Amino acid sequence: MRAQFTDTQIGRIITDFQTADIDETTKAILEFAVKVTKAAPTVTPADLDHLRSYGLTDEALFAIVEIVGFFSYINRIADAFGVELDDFLELRRDFNESNG
Image (cartoon, rainbow, N blue to C red; front, side, top):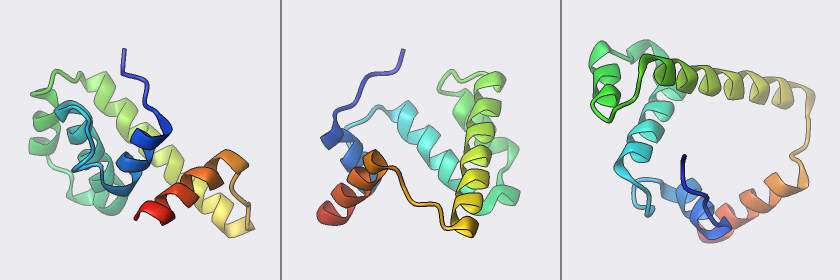
């Protein structure tokens, strides 16, 4: 089970997960999620093998890509229709802006 994070830790992860106090597996997952988000066609078998070296299964890799894809999909719909962030997401954004 993954650790529960405080609001401060989440803010630090949002601001710069590379320097946040999180385990190396989580950092590797986040690095991969960023790559899938920004440049999915550039993902290589070596990227997947890197995550497998942390003990992640193919099912976990699929779930990561599926979640990234779902968030990208939902964000595009929300942006296209001008959907506003929920209050709790606005708090996260405000934290990021004030600590970024």
